Amino acid sequence: MTAGRSPAAGGFRGVAPPGLAEHPNVRGFLWFRHAPPIHPGQSPVVLSMRSKYVLWGLRIAGAGLLAATAAIHLDLYLTGYRSIPTIGWLFLLQVITGFALALAVLIVPLVPLKRPPAGAVDAGVAAAGAGFALATLGGYLLSLWVGLFGFREVRTTAGLVAGILEIAAFAALATLAALLAVDILPSPWVERLRKAAVPGVAVASVAALAVLGGSVAAATGTPAAPTTASGHAVLSTTTIGGVSVLTNSSGRTLYWFAPDTSDRSACYGTCAAYWPPVFGLPAAGGPGVVTAKLGTIRRTDGTLQATYSGHPLYTYVGDTGPGQASGNNINLNGGLWHEVPASP
Image (cartoon, rainbow, N blue to C red; front, side, top):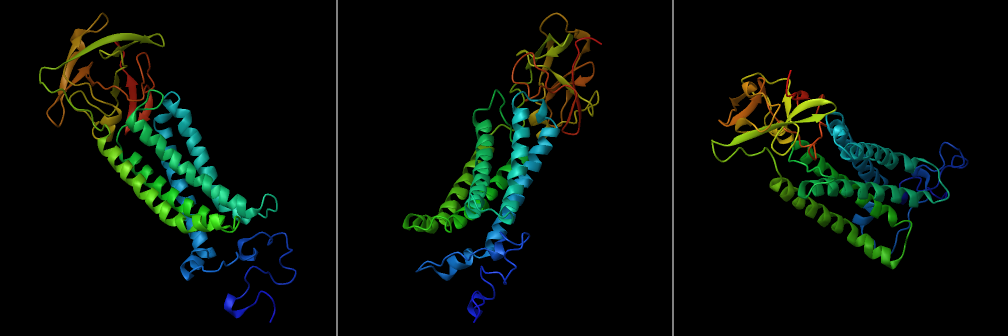
């Protein structure tokens, strides 16, 4: 019987037909790589997990999930996060890295490599993808808990979905990396690691889901209205870019939303989480505020929102301190946002 064509092996197992393995477009592909060794005591379940079909299933799932999270972050970057100092370029870096790792996870096993060994590179890329997914989740959780670079994230559906996808990407790629590592580091220590890899990844993923759920539940969502109906919103002015603009009592720039009308706000839910409404009766807190332009509207929950020149007023979570206007002229949450000039 010809070597490599054992019926029990189901056809060619790691040995290509004569001459075909030397072809430059074939050498290095998974089908013609040397079959991983079968260690004594391996169960049929483990052998099945090491099959190329399971490995490629994990590979495609992990790469797809990484790309999906990168796409969500790209959308967030384009629709507003790019205007936030420091956070903006970090989001862009995150997007580029996510797409690059997703592509690498799919391409590396198809590239013929001798040094470093293809298996080591393959396992390393999968491990890098898993680590990146977990690091991205960690950054999101940290921004929910204490904030990053002065910016504190709010609870949104997009953030929750991205977090779940990141955990799934970690699970798929960490499992893939562990299965690939068996073939490059055969030793008793690695054998023990192999047996603990899948349960370990499962426990870590469940723990991450629990932390994500608790963090999102405790995070800030839509801002609360004043506890008393007689609450006042003290308005002042400051100069940004040579223009006198309206601010709240903390010096934060105030904005108006293009889809709003003089008697109705169009910003609720996630929109109001990113653009907290200015609640209460407006009052002039310094020179430059035209009292005749002050007013209020009634929101759908019955609370009062301050207006100026007929525009309902908002702050922006992307502004990390007084004197900033990172929300000016951006298209986010269904329309354009503009800083409020103190005078026409």
